[in-house]
Length: 295
Image (cartoon, rainbow, N blue to C red; front, side, top):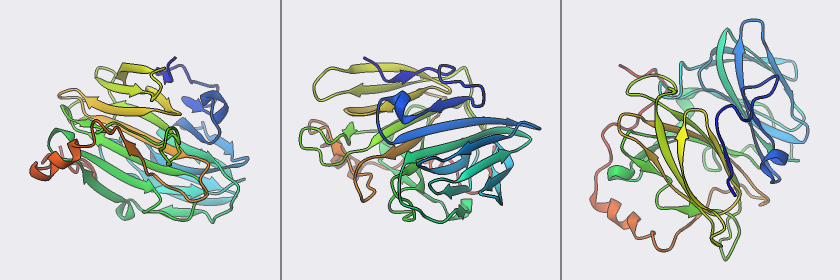
């Protein structure tokens, strides 16, 4: 069994990538990646879903939500800067247009209604986690601590410099065998190259996933644009090869009434966190901010 979707396997007539809860075999989390171009708008009605909309590589994106227009300044690429973003509530009708570039529409099945919210890039919380070769950047778009006006969805992105690992120690949030946290999680990967602003087809990374039961235990070569769904089990490390930084967009949602991103470490690896107390964080981080990266 594998929950791996290589780039190109989730293409539809209207989007570069679509993974619905039904396709993933679960109940809540979904993702659309729209590749926009002049005269080619993308439209979506959020039937029973809420959404977080953020640019991956599009700039000056016109976003219409229920007739109200917003402009996402966006970014040249995921390795270039943090994006501004929009929260859209259950039942919203969304249209996106831009001259070119990719936009992510992260979705979660939900029932509670909240107002549409636009958030500037400068208001997005960026933090560096871990230490040593496990240093990575976490950009908190709609996480429970950074954004409360949502029902089910949580969204963040992670940048791992070349030669480093993230999702470390391995952890899970599947509600199985004593782990009270329960979230479905999507990993959408982009692989960079040195200081390029966006993904590059040349690079590769690695992703390790294993379940408590042992039914799944795999380490995969990850390429730019690949996707992995995590319905259960420990995941990590996610490894960026030297000179090829790794980006992943995480979309999480689950049955809990209160949004959470809690997790349970693999008990055999929890001690690793203690080591970070005597290590320094990677000076290459933070990788991105609200302003374009200097090259």
